[in-house]
Length: 288
Image (tube, rainbow, N blue to C red; front, side, top):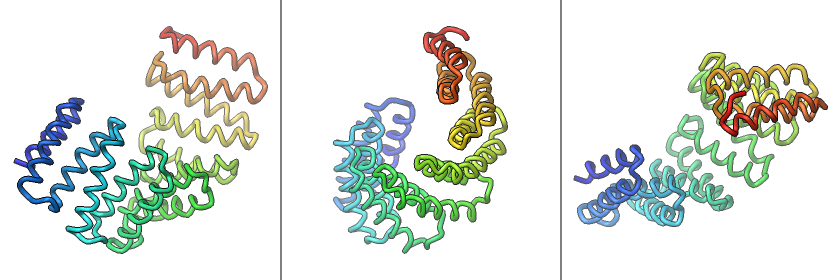
């Protein structure tokens, strides 16, 4: 009965029937409480399901106490060093992060990491999301010196576990490059963006929107380095990819806006105006 209710709630939510999903998730929680007792780990699972539904709808006021309760149940039932406790800590920390409560999020993310290190070892791939979370929250707080070691450690783990050309490796390379770019460390960012681009091309082929995004990132740092010809070529290629994939959809306007900003920055007002004009047509739903 409880498993069926949980399954039904998830299926409803994935189908976009949010109100119905929440109601069934509440029923699952009530059934667990009545059947298993207040401290059973199955209640924590129901609490997490319901909290995640609220979080997805940006209802943090409803989600937070559920995650707090789920954490307490798991700590009592499983012990403070169980990986499921780390999952609950990450869930609650994620809610704090999305609300801008960065200090609280950082404390819980770090606590979750310590639990995973003790239970799984310091090089287990399951540590990577936690490392990335700590990096993200410290970056949000402007603590840039604290960020780099976490990205680098996540990169090392993923390269060892997945190989140097895996998409997840490319994501971390992109994040680390973005950190360097935000500090105007363009020379440090460039090789990372180039490698991330290569992984994207190898994974998706040369005409995928993910490749277009990587081209934009690399073009940005090349412009910062004064490599304007290559930066322009990459931006034009990025726009061409988006146009091939989406035609006259407004998605294409973003690439044109990047190109316009580039032309403005290098003193080419006529080219910038042409891009802006094309953006206006796309935003209005017309053809270029």
